[in-house]
Image (cartoon, rainbow, N blue to C red; front, side, top):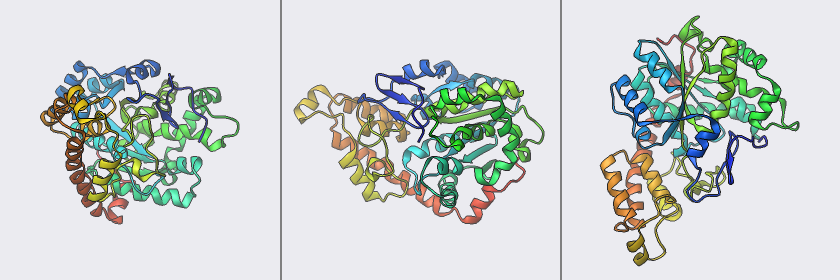
Length: 395
């Protein structure tokens, strides 16, 4: 991959589209990251507004601070409140056969947003990006895009409002906007944002415009016709923000609206907040293909514990929840607020032991993964073709 960009570094915290790492046992300092990236924190007032505009309770991930930062979410809410149309845009870089739970988070959340706003959604599969960055062939990256598409569809998206596309297949339609973005973006700014060097291939240097193009409604004439002013909301992990800072810089030069963003925190590897989930280490993550036994074994063996060294010490001091991966996973996937708070109190005070909390997590993850596997089994090649077909979608 390209050299790490000087995006956000703070005492060994590194966050850019190619590298995310922290030396702290409790992971990235997100409040400092908001300041460095120049985004805005999602406040209680903004959550209340979101609930009023969508007429539903905010998703637990917003209320719990998993989605914690934004750019111009207030503008989107103003626009929708006045009866305006909008659309959602998210994506996936298909570099592996199987997704892990961290990959599902933006799609599960985007599904909630699609239901809440009742709007169209476009999902970009950046098979071209993975060819440029990884030692994977064009044919294989294209195949992986279609395989990953099945896992994305299994999250429950509305086929009447969702367009999923491979860059290889759809780039021609977007190309006028891609070259507009390229002309509006200087090489020095791309180097500054992404840290590209002279040894990086020219495809990498040009790619950011391809990821930027779906932010503009004119990239989808089969959905929006000639309307170039339909605003876009992008849910993504915050490491993708540099792509959209570039996009937002280019937008006014092109007469387009700046895309709005809503950023998530990172889902930790089983081994701790200071480690990375790695495709080369299948025990670093829970995969959507894992069996119930594999899930149980991985949680029990590998999930980093904030429990103390002895039971006596644990009863006295309680668990350190800031480093405990099991509790972090529960805060993502245990959607019962009262139950999560009960575990927080019991475990944090030492009344619950690490093994008991791990058993609670296993009970949550096994049905979640099994239900995903059932949903994916229903996704045929015909279903994929329908989602990926360039067809009219009601804006």
